[in-house]
Image (cartoon, rainbow over all chains, first blue to last red; front, top):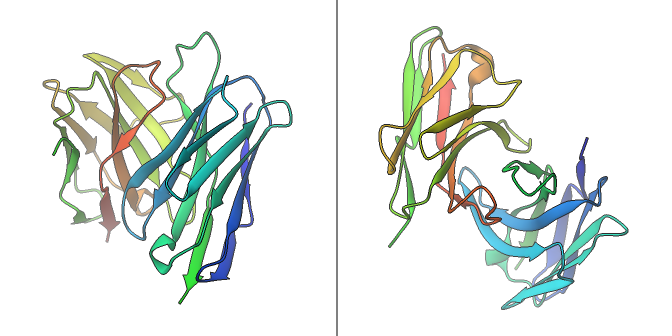
Length: 115
Length: 113
């Protein structure tokens, strides 16, 4: 059974700092991995999606990497801003024939960027 | 803008009183999902529709039902809400079952009194 873990559960950094959020998963047979952002009381916003054949994806100040063999993904945020404060969740999609639709989510990392 | 819309954003109901949450999408996606998210927990998939085909997760209580009258709309019905059903309910869509991208709505916060 796939399990997704995100450490730390919460992180506070000063504005301008570069930071890394971690995601680990127990079953390396994944179809893809997706990073989401969730603001308090809101829905999820997709940030980046990495297919199983890819090593990384970049969007603006965000860079996500994937190491399937070690069951790990990282989300790198450059030059953090107070507006980046949110909960960041990763989710993996299984590879059982590619037909499954189920995303397995981590519980997220709550990020606070202090002005 | 193409998007996923959920109504209402906040819903208060009484213990045992049926409630319906609504989701609509302008993306013309084939798949629509309902997730339940309790405080500080990961979203939990309740069920999904692929076109008109309904797929229930094995551990979704019978108290939860869903309807998809057309491509654009999907409803979540909670027949007899209990206190434990208080949560954020998230609707999401994807173009296909194989598609990795999920597009989420803003959620409906359900309170049960």
